[in-house]
Image (cartoon, rainbow, N blue to C red; front, side, top):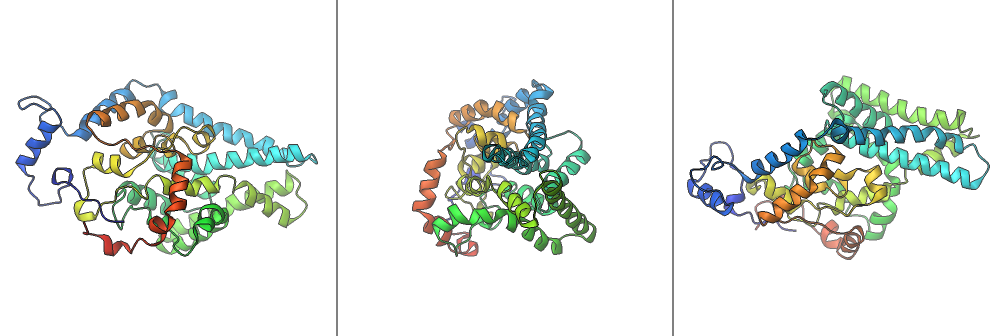
Length: 369
């Protein structure tokens, strides 16, 4: 994979660099901005942001946050019948309990963690921080600080920029394609808390102690409920149930994280494009999917482009502004990349060596055109 060649007019200008007046005039002419108008200095991203902001300002609380909070609330409500159904001797009812717990756990640990890390659940920064610790550490058994650092400060800030936000952390070159795509993701419930422990050495002492306490509290609470409410008779059976219910969506979780960025345009740090070019070329949307929309959220499935352009919008608002974004990019002759889940799965299965194994170290790619 090579770094994408970035036209001069796409590039970000570093500190101390003079902006080329001719490039600015050319860009305005290409965007249909006439000299002497109030929009003369407006960039594409500013123009799109204004359109989206108008939609946001005209939306109710229910549209802005309520609908997503209600979905998370339903996930918590479903936990009670899920745990109680595990007491049943009926295979059908027991399986229904597993299903309820698996779907609810995915919604809480993926959708809830994602929205709270982006401060999309409430306007209050402190409450968003509390929710992030709860969803990521207590429910998801991972470090909130490490999650925010990797996702918000690296992946979003440097999407598809080589060596920074290029999704290379998801690559495991030593695994075969079948093992990586269909077997290894099942180890996610075990790997996640182990990675969280490894991250503690990079965090301040108080933050590390909090993470250790919250992760332990979440895992122990889950185990305790299975033993005392669901009436599992042995430690092994309770741990097995924890493993199964936390694994329901491990396969699509790994797939979604690689499908929507790897294999698309990548950029070197020296030639990173303007935000709207970066996201339109380096992010892909998957089709609507009722189950994944509910558990992962629109911003991770069918509105990933919108999410990367406007990361603080809730899942529902990403869906609401989706027509605006797609029309705007088409009007400006920018790509709006979409592909089906099965198509991406076939691509990664057929080109696994090229996309996930044979790609040279990032340091060899930077600057190569």
